[in-house]
Image 1: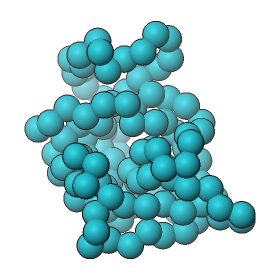
Image 2: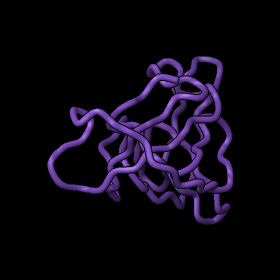
Image 3: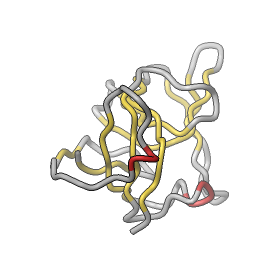
Length: 118
């Protein structure tokens, strides 16, 4: 579908093109899409700059799961681990050099279900 930031959130960038994905990454039912990763905020989860993440479209994830997070107030997206707190959402990178950040308005667009290494 396009690009996803693994770092500071970026404006959504779509550039649809077909890609072959191993069937083992896809469950029964559901809609899936792939995004090329830009950045290094998820390296401790084995997701590097240039890799492709396979995402299952879904509006929610469990705390700590990797997700495509859309920030509608900024029209930006990012790839982070998501944690729900009392009145905010904590978006956590998987890179010891980067700090988590907090948002109050986050829309989960999907859960990362696989990674294709570059």
